[in-house]
Image 1: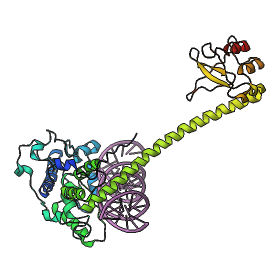
Image 2: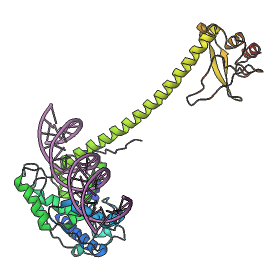
Image 3: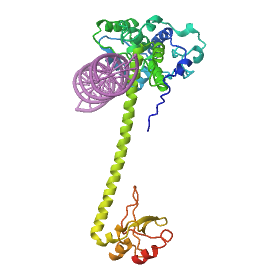
Image 4: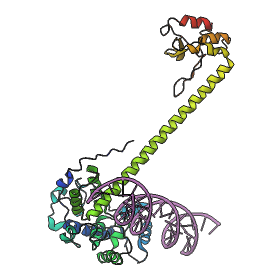
Length: 368
DNA sequence: AGCGGATTAAGTTTTACTTCA
DNA sequence: CCTGAAGTAAAACTTAATCCG
C-alpha cells in the first residue's frame, strides 16, 4: 500500500478556487443561520430538547444523545442529510435548499432560490475584519477569535455533539471574547467540516502554500493566514506520520519474510551438515546443478566441472550409502516442495534424458 | 520568511465504573 | 439479586497552536 500524493505545482493557483465562487462573509453568515436551522429541525423531528444546564458542558450533551441509543445518536446528532463535503460536488437533490455549501452558487446547487432565500445572516462579518486581520500581530484576532471560530464553527458542525447546536450566538460570542480577554489560556479553534474539507481539497492540489495561495485560502475560509499556514504544516506532518506508519508496516512484513527465509535456510544447512557427517563421501562428489524434472517434480543433478571442490556425484554417494534413501527403481529420492523452493539433498537426484544426456545413464546406473 | 519536528493543550470520543430504579 | 439506564470521571485520541532550530 502506498500513499499517493499529488503535490502539484506550488506556483499554480488552486484550480478549484477559480472554479468556486468566493466565500464571502455573507456566505459564512449563512452558515450560522443554517446551524439554527438544524437545531430547530432536530427538535421538531426527534422531539428532544437540547438544554444547556451550565457547567455540565459537553458531557451533558453527550449523555443527552446517549439517551437515544447509538443508532439514534447518529441520527440525531447528524443531520439526516447526506452532506457531500467536497467543495465541488453538486448538492444532492434530496438536500434541502438551505443546506448548501457556502462556496456553491445558486446555479451549482440547482436551487431556484435567490440570494434572499439563503436564510438569515445572523452573524455577518465585516469583510474588513477578515481582510485586515493579518498575521499574528493582530491581537484582536486570536486563534479564538469569535469571528472565525464562531462564524464557521457554529454553523454546520452538528455531528460533534450538541455544543454548536445549542449555543446561543450571544453565548458563543461571549465565550470567545472571554477567552480573548484573559488571554492566558490558549483556546483551540475547531475548524468546521466545511473548512477542513476545503483545506483538504487545497492540500490535494498543493501540499505547500505560497503567500498568495495562503491569503486566498484564508480569505475564502474566513480564517487568518496564520491559521491556514498552521493547518498546512500540521497536515504535512500528519501525512508524513502516516507514510512512516505505512513504511514501518512494510518493513515489518519484509522482516518477517526474511526471518522465515532465514529459518528455512538454516534448517537446510543443518540437514546438509547432518548428511555430510553421516555420509563422508559426500564431499568428494563433483559439484552438481540441480534441475527439476517437470514430470515427476523431482530434483535432478547435473555434474559440472565449474566447482571442482565438490568432488564426485551424488549418485556415487548414494551408491556408496547403499541407496537406502533412493527410489528402488530409478534411484530417485522423493522431494518435498516448500514455499521458498525445493529443499534439496545431495542424495535427491533424478537425471532426466533431456536435461542431462551425458550424465543421466550414469546416474541411473549408479542408483541401481 | 518559511519549514519541519517536537510539544502543548483544547476539544472530543471512548471506556470503565458507580448509582439507582 | 439481576438488569438496564443514567451519570460521571478518566483515559485515549485528535488536532490547532506554539516554540525552536
